[in-house]
Length: 205
Image 1: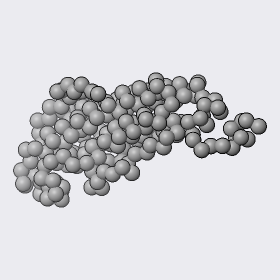
Image 2: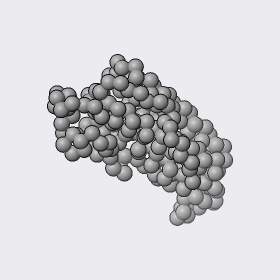
Image 3: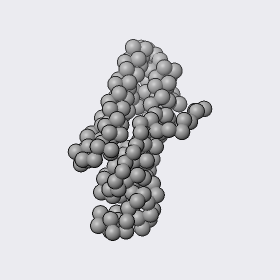
Image 4: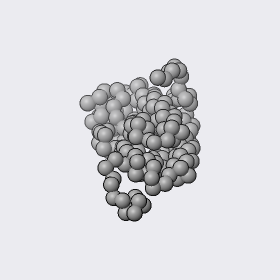
């Protein structure tokens, strides 16, 4: 159960339309390393997590990623809502416009739609946390690439905020991995991997 506050985590106030920027930033909405995949990844992984403290971290970050999804959608919306047909045509935004007008739809910068293959939920906490740390670094790299293309400070500021949160999430997942490693031994590892009955591998011989 969540309480929704009707405000963005970081303000977005973009004054000038720019379809070219919108087409790259939308990758962080529904692209391979975007906020939609991140939120679904962490909020799915938490169910198989054997440690309540780590499950809480997955819940916290997964929920924050939903807030970041809202921010990215707002950025794309403000960049496109006042576009003229001439700007749409000149910027190469026409293909998106035909299918979605200027609505928000999850896709990568290259136009590939979002699907569940964008994220992993393996059910093994070490595997999942390593996936999560890598995902945060890939998202940080994507924001770095976006920032190299932006010269409008109204757009840069919220993107910089989102980039910094990826760094923080990477650090928190590192802390979660240390919690698991501190508590893990062969007995409780195989206890949450049902079906593993190799006595030799489990250290029972």
